[in-house]
Image (cartoon, rainbow, N blue to C red; front, side):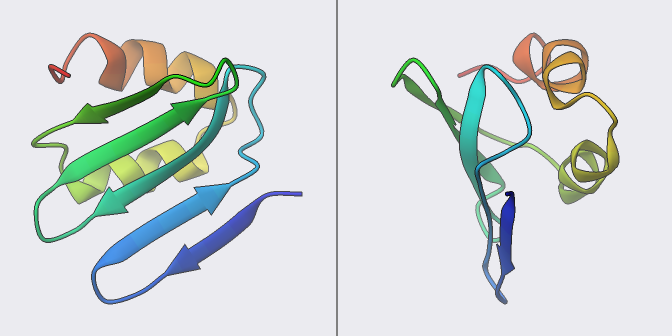
Length: 76
């Protein structure tokens, strides 16, 4: 089951409904998105607007959204 926690500074999602993505944390102040993959890899994506995070949370396929809107758009 997905676990979502939002504070003034951070959005954290664990157990993301994805076969490739385990969890992510988004820092609102720095706009850094940190993604942890089920393979164990962890990557930071800078300059990700909060609107992209909100859209990702609503997306039917988290993996497809990541590949189209994050992976190749924001350098890590």
